[in-house]
Amino acid sequence: MPSVTAEIQVNAPVKFAYRAFTNSTTLREWLCDVATVEPHPRGRMYLWWRGDFYSSGHYIELEENKKVVFQWYSNQDPEPTQVTITVREKGGGTHVKLEHSVPDDGSWMIAVTEFLKNWEDSLQNLKSVLETGIDLRIAHRPMLGILPGDFTPEQAATLGVPIHEGLRLDGVVDGMGAQKAGLQRDDVIVEMAGKPITNDFNTLPLAIAGKKGGDTVGVVIYRGAEKKTISMQLSKRPMPEVPFDPKELAKKARELFEPALVDLKKVFEGYSDKQAMQRPDPKEWSALEIVAHLIQGERFNAILLSSLIDGYEITSDGFGTNVNAAAEAIVKANPSIKLMLEALHRSVEEILAYTELIPEDFVANKGSYYRFGSNLLQPNFHLTAHTQQIKDALAAAK
Image (cartoon, rainbow, N blue to C red; front, side, top):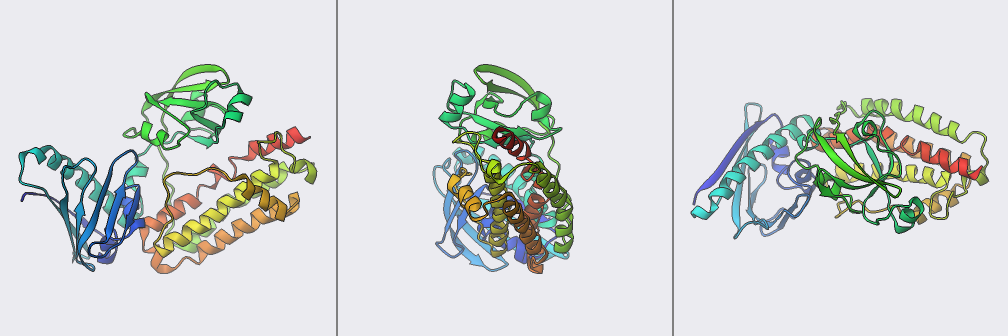
């Protein structure tokens, strides 16, 4: 039986290379978009990539920190095949060898070529994740610089948009491709790079799959009733420098959070609690409900960190939507501008304190640590992204 063979030397301990094939969270960080595994003989191994591609198999043999054998059976393969991973210490690091056995049948020749390229690319990403924490799939992925929002039939009617499927923008990020192309809040994207964009956010990354920063794509939007086609250059993705020292990471994050909190407090100056709780429209958030949404964001960071440290990251089939009752509950428990801003400040202090207390062995798990740290060091994409929305809500109340 012929086999595809790919090998790579990784500057990381053997236990992390072994974990990369036996832990759901780690598999997502270098190989697929969603994984669920049960690492024991006959235990499930389900891997999914954005779009319709997946492999559904099981583990056949496991020898801790030495060998992993599993069944590979993708939705494009006529029958199951077998993958064997061996890991061993070499040169102060780890040598990883992958052998993918396929039937001795000429009909598999095209698949063999694809297997080889995909496994070689994936092992290069494994090396990057284990050595630096950086997922090359993200580092090479372009950025749009948009802040996606909900898009309901009621919003479509309010905006005068004649369709109900698309991605409505809450705003755009200064200096990035979307802003430079002229996109603005309440534009509804219905097509990008020749592919339809629907209410399902996953249609957006699928539309630009294979694109890189610097590429130009066509974007079709509705601005009210007017349909427009815009040319947009995709921005290159800046990868933040994440210090592999939890105290230093917390300090660096604080330098970003504190000015944002000061600016947010100033936005509420001159407004009453009643005005801050008033909704511009029955289906829109009040200023304080938007602050509640920011609090939820920091609570999510804490949940994410716990799941990464624990090694059992929560996963789902989508991004979900905002549950209005949750925001209302936070405001009900903190019914004033003062209390809500204090609650936001506490949620920030909690995540910064948690960051300082990150266990040492988790720092060594560079893929998960970097993923959390890079998310923490980009609060401006969320904490300050809703500033204009808060201003608009307050102005409407006044």
